[in-house]
Image (tube, rainbow, N blue to C red):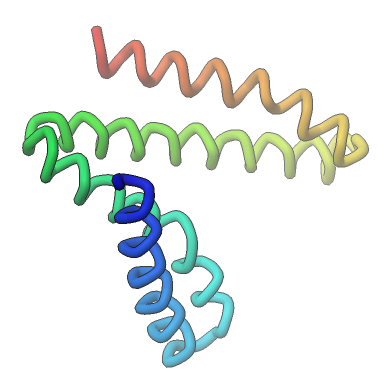
Length: 112
């Protein structure tokens, strides 16, 4: 049942963000707001209904830390491709180590 509810909530929020992106300029906002925020909001809403606010605050902080790790991963991939001249596949695989270190380190900081 949770998966069906997530599907419906995610679909509704994706549609709302797509409408918002269609109204705003540039059109790339539609793609930017389409996927991750809708899934995150649906997940947090269901977690709040089932587990309460303290659980959702930990989930929200984990999502923020995950986005930080993704941003650092993306920056690392770009630097390896542009400055070092690496192939995309090699840079992506090598930067996974950076992502893993940042994600685990951030989560350990949150827990500890």
